[in-house]
Each structure stands twice: as structure tokens, then as C-alpha cells.
Image 1 (cartoon, rainbow, N blue to C red):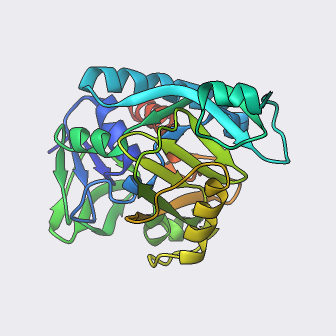
Image 2 (cartoon, rainbow, N blue to C red):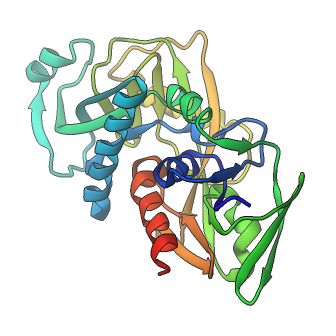
Length: 304
């Protein structure tokens, strides 16, 4: 019997397994590992992390170490933010901007030094080879006795472990609504297109662009659980970023993903049974995954 069962192979589940470094099995509902996390922007932008800024910076250091260890492309870079609502960045003018982002057509922006981008597809393709992941294994029931999980029933049979961590993301309501745990699903799109030589992370109002092997655009977030592409949101993102950066729209790849956000918008790391922890609920899940995973592991180790 494995020591730990992790339900969910998204970024939080994979990072939890990596930090646990013990006997672990990961259960994944879908055929594709980290399918929802692959629709993320894979960036950490501390100025947007509000009261979790320190945790976001811890997350940055963790990903830098992982990138170095596994040879994954990542870059620590500046952030340029264009918005009428300022959040405390250094104001830079057109001349200064052209010095480090010559392709941008911006009169004025806020400048921040500390952003991080990770090439997500590389990260997931490497991490999924590190662990025993059971794909197409949807949890259909949780068998509990005396506040302890005895086993999980899945679409492929019964699974038993000593401890359980649920990194279930947008599937959390389906499994745990009976426990009074509520999360709202916010739908967004990742747009992938050809590179443009963008050096840093660009934010135009609420839309974001960053470049790795490709140019990645993101930023829309609406409470919605439909997997269909919202082309109005795609147009808004392209138009916002396109005001200051030329975008090739001839061959776009679009991915749909969901953020699972708690009612108070704070991350959830909660003991739900004597031998089970739930991790979910934060809108910047990629940024905080290393910190939340560590908290969950400590709760299992020390029983609190």
C-alpha cells in the first residue's frame, strides 16, 4: 500500500509529489496529465499577489531551482504594466521603455523588477515522468469510517493509501460540496502564437503577455464552467495587447482552463479527514503551488 495518494496531476499535485519525495501514487481523471494547468500562463507576478507576495516570491525561488535541476527554460525578468490604476511601480517613459523593449509602443508604464516565467509544457513533460501517475482514474467515491479515509473508489477500481492529498482544482465542488467546501470556477484562455522578441512580462489593463518558446497571452477570468472557447474574450485579449505589441494572429492555439477560487479568495489547505488534506482555492495556483504543497506535507507529517 502506498504511503501517499495524491488526487489531481495539475501543478499543485505534481509539486506536492515532488516535495514529498516518498512512496506516492497520483490519480488523474483525464488521459492527459496536467491538462488544466497547461492552460495557465506559468508566470509569477508578485505585484499582483497582494497579501501573498512573500509566498509568491518563495514560489519563484522554488521554480528557479527546479528549472536549473531539470534543464527547464525559465527566465527571471521585469514586468511592465499599462493601466490607469497604479499599484506602486516605478513610472518609466517611452524612451526608457524603448531601451529594453524596443518593439513596444508605450508612452508610459509601471516598471517592476521581479517577475518569473517558466516554460510550462517543458515543466509538465518532465515532471510527469518522475511519478507513478494513473491516468483515466476518476475518483467516484470516498469511503470514510470514523473520520478516516479507508479507500477511494475510482473508474479503474479501489485504491488505498495511508494518507491522501486532494489537489482537485476545478473538480473540488463535485467531491466535497457535502463537506461545505465551496469554490467558484473562473474560466480563462491561454492564447499561443509566434514569438515577437518580447523580453519581459507585459500587462495591459487586465491582459498579460509573456514570451518563451512562443508568445503567450492570457488575462480573462469569468465565472463560468463551460469548456467552449469564448471568442469575444480572445478578441479582447488580442486587441488590448495588440495596442502596444504587434501580434501574429494567422495561426493561434487556444487552450481553455479554470481557476478554482474560494469564497474569500484565500487559498485552502485544510484537513478534511484525519488522514486527508485538501489544497485548492487560490486564483494564482501556479505561483503558490510550492508553498501550499509544503504546508500540506507538513500537516501530514506532524498531524495538524
